[in-house]
Length: 222
Image (cartoon, rainbow, N blue to C red):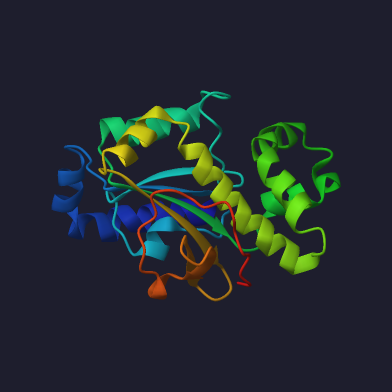
């Protein structure tokens, strides 16, 4: 805690004063253009990764970057998505998974969270991902299996996004675009799903706007 307290003092005494007008402007309201859905993992910093400032990203975080189906669970995720699209008018939604994801490892190894009942219950929203992995990747193990799980889960959550009325309406009206990303912690690389090749490609080589996730993934090694 001491480190956090010292950080607050540094922010207030050093940084805030030099950007006071910026923060006064933020106090008047927000108008982010992007809803960024990612994992709660402490190693993920959406603003650092995208080099954005406060007010530019509307961020939704939970274990496993999950988006429960609208017809199955109306909780904080549904409320956040609805407010972002209908209330704030975001133009893009990004679902961003990441390498070394503990939640995705738990899908592969349920025994690792046997003593975490709440997490077990939450990860039931990723059951479709588990089914895909069992059906398509029975021959994989270790890191290759985890990579496939991370990628397939992002695409599963993208499909779940379409069950939310505000998302389906926004995509149909062409006012909203959806993007599937995977962030590789150890290299800093970001991979985006390309529906034409059915693979995740380096974002710098990505040229296609996603409006619908193709679940026929050819898992790419990242």
